[in-house]
Length: 314
Picture 1 (cartoon, rainbow, N blue to C red):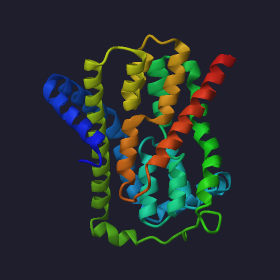
Picture 2: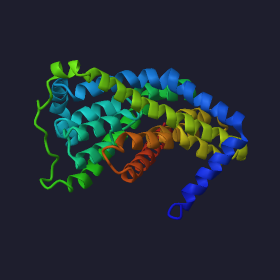
Picture 3: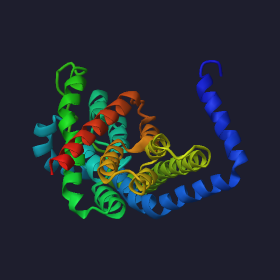
Picture 4: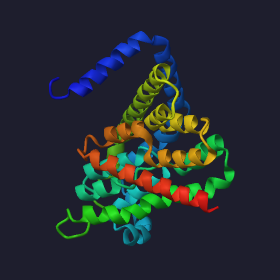
């Protein structure tokens, strides 16, 4: 306790707050679990199962064979690192982090490349950006293309900066290449419960995501019940969980331009709930979380600058 007094005090405050406001806790937990069950579970679970299967079978080789022809020269990734790029940009939080961790655990990528990929390959999915953020909450369909392009191109551009640091950690100056095709025989694995293990691992991961969403939703409800309604409190609430944060920002009394900029920054950052989800996905592989947080903050800052330039230029 003496080594982490601030954390201990925060946990105790949360504990007594939850005991003091049971109805608030129920409301927050219900919202978080419903959001997870209706949207996150059916969105992430099938892809988690599929990716678990792909990583342990020769099917991964054929996907990387196609993607590596243009992603390896562009982003400087290794052969199998291209798979993490695809999942990180297409499947949404925290699929990029989970894929990177899984590839590292089966020795398909090096530790330094895993850290490099984590710096830019764990992002909000295109479907979430276009449907939930722009159309449903901001109600600005004309912003779909610029919003999508800025949120996608910003981490790609910053990858060139992050790569300079992580490549220095490789003795050869470039990321090591795993030998394509070194997979276990899937015909034997299926009879040994291979598919069962893939499904159970996916359920464990998506359950962790649901637990974090529920706890952060409870925290938001508790804070809204005790803190005054100010701009600072709005920024605090919205930074905790991306789905709730986008809704709060879009429905606030801020100017339209401010709403757009803040929503873009939050979408790029992902919120502290996504940080916690990411940490749970990479904990087994022991990848550091602090550099990732710093890189996401930089990405959010650059995103907000680019979207501001676009808004005020037109």
